[in-house]
Length: 189
Ligand code: CUA
Image (cartoon, protein in one colour):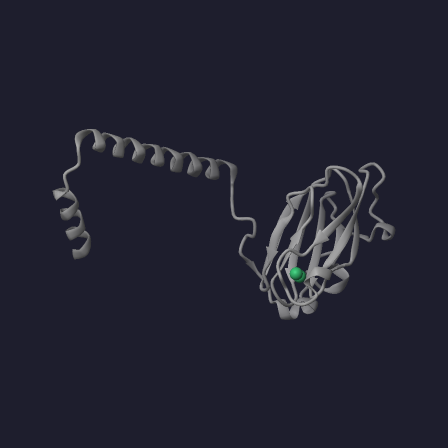
């Protein structure tokens, strides 16, 4: 605290020209205004970091309820919302292949079973790190039908450049939750 008082006292002895002081105040005012705008916007739009600091035991994924093998992939709940659970591990994404509808809101939950991975799907907002011990949840949608690559974009070992998978995006009206599209209905978490 003494240090701070000394610092302020010293600042006071510094001569600042009247015009300079005016500009200092104007810049501080602009910074304050920008911070206020960001805070207000974040507050009213519920902005939060992409991964909501949700933790999970990466070594016991297969024993966890949510990421047990038969719960992975695309799931349709009773309200018609689509949830996709994916596990990243050296050197693949599991399940290796999924099918989802285009132009539909999809919630992806990614976890790693070993080291740090990343996931990038071109032409979507999907680009995040998959940190062991944490769940990365991202909401996205695919603009049009087609085959989309799923790429690992964090160096994870010698096989990193072979770590990819793909997603078949089907026209919204043609997509149906069935075993053919690897989709499961109403699985309890
Ligand atoms: Cu996984 Cu690079």
